[in-house]
Image 1 (cartoon, one colour):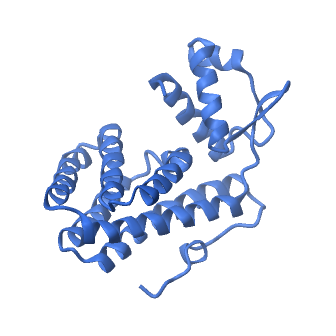
Image 2: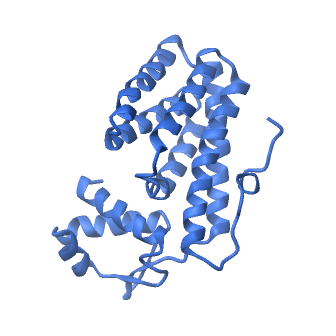
Length: 231
């Protein structure tokens, strides 16, 4: 996907999740191209991707309209991602080679300076590599592909939390717990640390969308979205 299309998605996703663009709002290619001062090509690319992620509906002869995002469906997706990423951390702790563990440790060390400098753009790129490396470390392509698909579908919702005060510091500390467990080959600790990390992020996503959909039934606590497994 082009960089321009990615930026369009990030902007529109934030507006959809915050409620600035309500369900049913029509997104006109021409108007979006004028707004972002680009051709229609990256706009079409962005709309196709947003349709695949469930943010908008692409209706024949009617165009693109903001979707009515169901909290129950989103909760299901977030729960699945949470459990699968935790499983990836557990398997990586058991299966990663020494070289793979060193790569993971190095990425985590590199993010420290980005957190100190509040460089969110570069941090998010390393964050992507961090999670991808843990998926690869499972040495199970089926699980890695499932997680990759969920992360792609839910990326717009996570990115809508950008700019939250202290976000990078908290995430970096949580990553540290994951790294420590994986380096120690402690699968149970790695599972618990990653589950805690992803659950916190997912709860933030649900809170944002619930606020935007005021008056609708909502999940109010992390435990309601991600029931305790006694870990």
